Length: 259
Image (cartoon, rainbow, N blue to C red; front, side, top):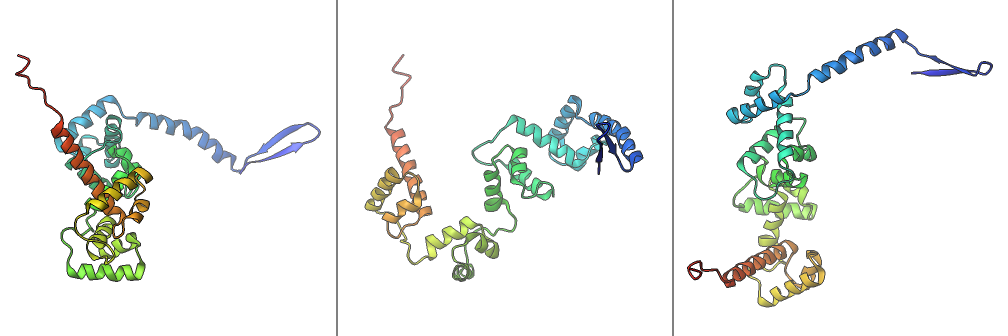
């Protein structure tokens, strides 16, 4: 710690530094450390070489590291994903197989695990998209496929115990939160209607969207027996059908008529 002593007569300040020799040595060492950091910067030749190695070996960083003896596997991965971010910022649409493999690989690294903001910067996706892709599709702990009778019984017991806290239920039943929610409302909830939507329900759904926007919890209050997720799915299917019918009605230009 530094402390100062003020002399009233001379109006000067004397600074007392404990362990001055150690402090002086750090001043001498710091420029050397800064010079080392500057030499560790990535050159354009190393970047082009990294691109060639990734094209050859994929993301096998341990293999690629043999061509970079002075670099670590983590530094190679960080540089590569940073370069990918510069090319693609917040991509949308379906995830590719390469993106899934990269997300699985990043989740195995301690410095990236569940740090969705850092992962999103590496993959060029939003943090929410990365989190949803992992929790609903790629997490190896998740069960997939048809629900068994034992799972249905366990789900009902967990709902009685914890209420509709889907995150808690999903961790105990080893299914995604969305899967548990949909399974309960689509098949197990006795208060929810099953089967197709009627024309009257469709009209109430459309009127609710016009009145409340996409506030689904408010919309389903006027549609007894339906829930928010089911209303979203029904509305999307309706919009999809409408777009298909409009596409069929639009006339196509026959190139033979102009000849």
